[in-house]
Length: 243
Ligand SMILES: [Zn+2]
Image (cartoon, rainbow, N blue to C red; front, side, top):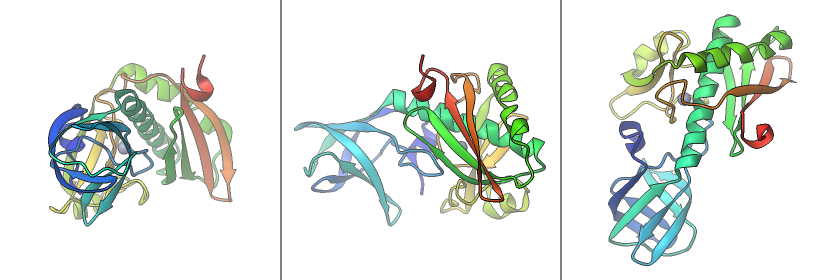
């Protein structure tokens, strides 16, 4: 589905209108929220209406329409002010961009190894699973230095769209079924590009430059079955890596 946050990634608050509402659920004319997906958690935030502020607890996509699930069973109406929690969005952008950097380095260093799963957490950590039957865990752990080199190089991160069939033909552009977004109604798929390093289909929110993040540590590597390696990473200063 078309997301406002893809076109306006920096707009975290806006004034809009209620389009449709039932108690505890609302659709808006415009919404700056990322509803989650591709391993990224949904945004958090609030909606201000004439009855006060109400928390947005989650999202539901029904028939390609975005519903906001509210903290109280009120039926909103009229004009509302919507706000995404900026620190949570920032943390997700950092984690998400960090997973792309790790993904790119694994793809390069381990012969096009593909992602089998990704999950970002609300404590500044994330895990990525790769199809890596033969990998040496010390080599994976050693990717921490090149990850932070990429951060220091402050490389530009951009988005563009290509035809889905074209994307399918390029090896590595669709890195994982669990991560790639569905094509838009125009048959296009959104590509996230870290200049010169990585290019892959993704529907999440990312940084504008790799340098806009806290440093990243590799926390743990687990073997998950014969084929999969699970790499846990964390942002320095948060969660398990808080000072
Ligand atoms: Zn992404």
